[in-house]
Length: 490
Image (cartoon, rainbow, N blue to C red):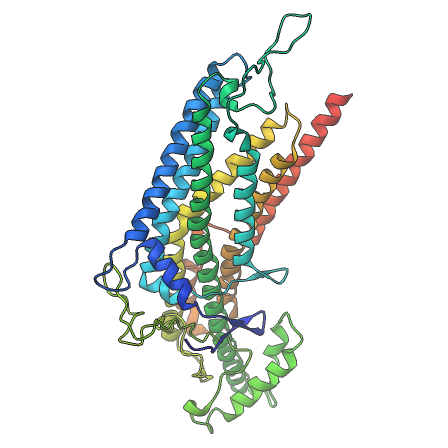
């Protein structure tokens, strides 16, 4: 394994992006059933698949069994609506875990996703988004299992299910230290199986969804870097074309840095970048291309190679181009990101060249959107339903610490995942704005406006405005809850 590191452009700066470690790829391949050799037998992946599907099935049926008796029991306040909602949420939970397992396999054997997959993502408060996804998902799984630990209790003899007193006995609505199955008068083994299957399935739910989420944030980051590189080329095109147009207008002395007044970067190296641009433009005809280096501000994206040693790698289905010969590795993005060592020669781009590069980016963005839209819509729907049900539950019950935690933690996933979409769409909007318009480019703009660069979920483009609307809605819901409590206290 080589120890070199690639560099990518992040807000005008270069940050290192580590390669996928060899051991990590082996673990993923063995877990998902990806064949590394033609004679490999996916024994480990088969066991994991059976465990995932089996635990999901046991979790669904034991939950449905308990909900049925809870609705009929005199010792609980659950009605038919409560039982139906719990079964629906559990169905959503189990279905998403099983689907994410299959989707993870399809993503990791797809040659284009292997090309675009890198161990990098945008950072949130200087923390890697993929790491935050792991923290959030693992925290939710941990609290979920701890909060339902009463399902593991054994049967307690001489336990009263009614309040004692001189008045007629009333059912206990919140019996403590009792197994919920004992409360509804069924075998406690049902709840014990329910809790054990939930423990097992929640781990698989964490792993499979984490793999898909990491692919999402990594591929979205790759798309963002690719768009920024194209924007860089368009800026150079506009700079040269602006000088040419000013000369044609008969302007005596064109302002060389006029267009640079319209460039904003989120760091303090803008002056250095401008100097590098000027030097590159002045020396473009003097220095051979193979001897020029890309400037530190260009969207360099050196390949994160995964060397798999001297063994050939086999993948089920068609052999992807990402594996070659005895030095199998993740190759560079041949159709998306050009070799970072080769500097783009500043020149006025033709209409065909702009449309061709624009089309490449648009097709790769569309591929990621189509592949991930079902998973994204499913996880958004599950989190929304989970949060809405819990807020309605609090209208008649006092919140507990674990309930509040399980309400807040899933909501953190929404802006984290949606921001990957929003970042790509935000950069994609800049492309058309960065093209200097000329009379010959009128038809070009007609095509570009009809094919926007957008990552969508079933045709809906996620933007930072969408994320802000969701956050505002959650805050409004909290405010409504507080208002209702204050009104009921009057």
